[in-house]
Length: 262
Image 1 (cartoon, rainbow, N blue to C red):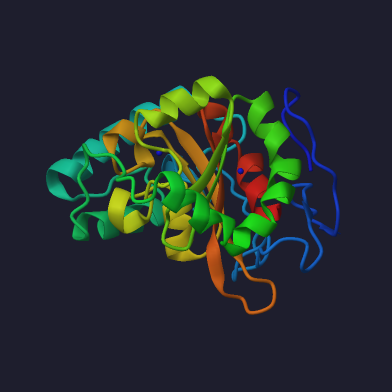
Image 2: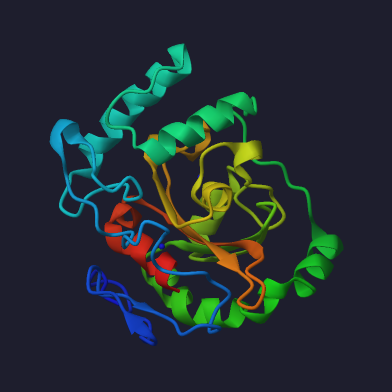
């Protein structure tokens, strides 16, 4: 259902080219199988600013720094119910979310459902041990593991089909996420579970942040997540996505910049 940071989190080591917009650093080419910090539009994911009507000029940022999460939750809940009832998109739904909602509806994703577990036990262990992302998982843990633990978040990595291979972090958060099948082996592709950060990041091939009722499935509405696609540095082939999942604090623009820069 993410370098500067909030005071309660630990800053990973900075390497590579810095971003003047958000303060995060992009690792050198080949450090991780990630394509780039900035999208094709050349914008940092954290460059959004408020505009009239309560919308954001940068559609990739879920919540502007300093905004009230509770107020935006209420507004999104109303917009979500309007879309569910009549297929009508209302403010303050971002374009990236509206497009994802429409794709999810066309795929006939259940709004009340949860992800299906497609891999388990020995099959899951063998598959992820042989997956290319297994080689960079230790680096993901080094750069993002402390951030997840300190903030009671989860670090998750999925393959290109949206199947979660690793879900690690705070024990309480893992138990709560298990109620919506955010567990290793579950398929969180957008076509299967609707709008969600790892699945939608794969669908649009760039970093994405999803907050509260922006998620297509209702059981995921209490959560916030930020994810970025991961590519083979040699071939550019999409390998999967890396994700941080947790509470409202992850709606900050720095969370999106964080996962986009790793």
